[in-house]
Length: 85
Image 1 (cartoon, rainbow, N blue to C red):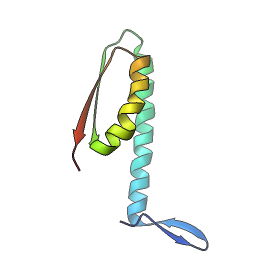
Image 2 (cartoon, one colour):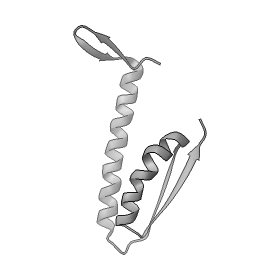
Image 3 (tube, helix red, strand yellow):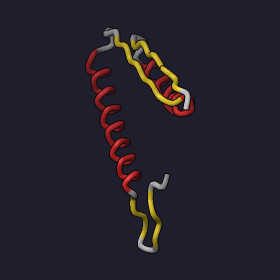
């Protein structure tokens, strides 16, 4: 799938690239909201966090980054659902 087109003037997103860009922006906004909610809940709150995604992304990016949060907030129960594909 082509996400952008390169020309002498620079790069331009394709329709698919624009969809992916919007999706990534929404994920970034959601992660900020989640961290704000975790921090606002207090140290003694018990929180459950469920995250699902493709196995490769979960293992290489999501789970390692969540480890930092779990270490900082030990009352968070993280559940990771790995999806093949």
